[in-house]
Amino acid sequence: FYPGHDLPPAERREAQRQWGKSHASMRSERLAMENFKRLVAPGWVHEVTTADREAFLTRRLAEVGSAASVDTDLRVLRAVFNVAEEWKHCPEGDNPFAGRGKA
Image (cartoon, rainbow, N blue to C red; front, side, top):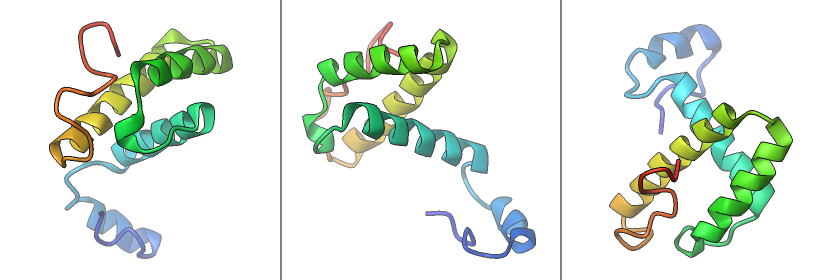
């Protein structure tokens, strides 16, 4: 939730200064989640597994050809799933993107 996001551009820029996250962070999260949804078509957040992560990794790498871009998406997805754990949308310790070398 970003208060003032629906304002006209000039007023939105002023409101952005009060946001906890930058617009760029919000945009990168949204793009990573949209790419994951498009390439993997997951069900519920608590049903996402490491197999879904591997499918995303393979398909995204073939699409962009840059390991750095895929790694960025994986790091963003790890953060999103950490929030899902924190908010009790999936079991604790069940983040398919967590762990060394997983993102």
